[in-house]
Every structure is written in C-alpha cells, then in structure tokens.
Image (cartoon, rainbow, N blue to C red):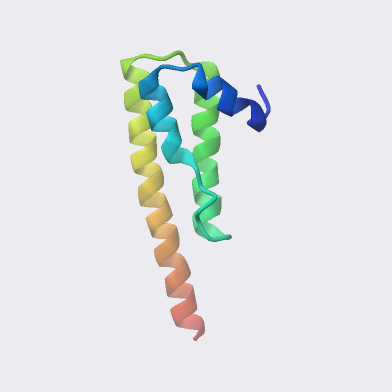
Length: 89
C-alpha cells in the first residue's frame, strides 16, 4: 500500500468523479480529538478502497455513501464533545 504522501499523486490519476469524492475526506480543518479522529478513520478506509478498487459507477456510489456516513459520525462526535463540555462545566 502506498504511503499517505503518494495518495495525492494517485488521486490525480483517477477519474474526475473519484477525485471529486475523495476531496471530502480531508480532516485537517477539524479540531483535535473526537471529530478529527472519527474522520481520520473514514479517510483511512477511503484511501484503502482507493488502493484496491478501480473507478466506476459503483465505486463512486460507495465513496458518496462513505462521505455521508463520515459526515453523520463526525456530527455525532461534535455533539458528544459538546455534551462532555456541558457536563464538565
């Protein structure tokens, strides 16, 4: 499996639909902790799939659904962090 630094090059060689979906797996903008950790797990899976599967309609759909699941999980992680802060303070 290629190193993480190689994925930018790999993504650039993929179908435009794959490139578009992969852009939603960045997580550097998220705060440290739960939300970023959750997002990183989804990104890891997306990158693994990118290394295994070829481009095609089903892969595009799989990435779209993974993005949707990631977004829901990250939102829940944000809610969890807020709830902990509320309970602690």
